[in-house]
Picture 1 (cartoon, one colour):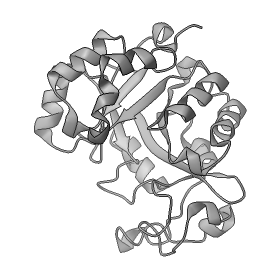
Picture 2 (picture 1 turned 60 degrees about the vertical axis):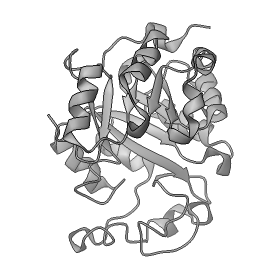
Picture 3 (picture 1 turned 180 degrees about the vertical axis):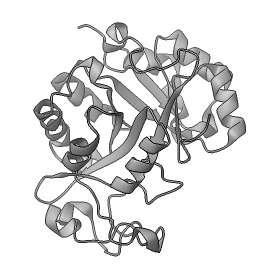
Picture 4 (picture 1 turned 180 degrees about the horizontal axis):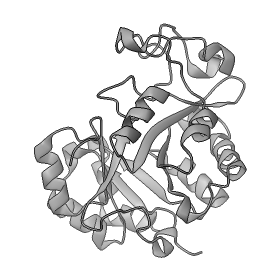
Length: 256
């Protein structure tokens, strides 16, 4: 099997010396996360990629929301999977952030692609795929429909769920895969695990709180690229640039 990372060139980089500028849930420091307003703001700020999270509704529509419930970011209560698309889009997903965003809705992935595909890259996280049978297949169908399945289309799919990533890779092997790592999963960056990822993973993406120069060197030594999340301190951004990471995810993606 051809390893995606072996055939993927740095087509996404505007400057080989600068990491990709990736807007966390759009521009979550300035607008309600994972909304069209947030994505528009991130584009305005000059990001290379939009990072977003997907979950699935009762009627099997992919929607852009971080949590498995609507409680935190809307005026509603309940699990995403218990709402139809029409029901979930009737909720206010902006007022919790600021009254200026009253009436913002939870967008479907299709709506996000409709406005931004072909203009910007996408870093798509499969959230809680164990809750949503066939989520990987649903995403693959959406990407195929929009002809976003080749390596030059600036799509990266990431998750903490290794099984879901493997399944997605089997469906669309040309799309780069990123495995997310946080501090509680530090063993996932052992040499043994890095070797085990090599058949399907292109990016190993750790949380900023666990990053050091040695770790980044080891990730690169094994042939992976790396995107660091979520970086909101200027000193951290400067340090990561010196580490030559490939991407930085930030709530305030207007960092220079």
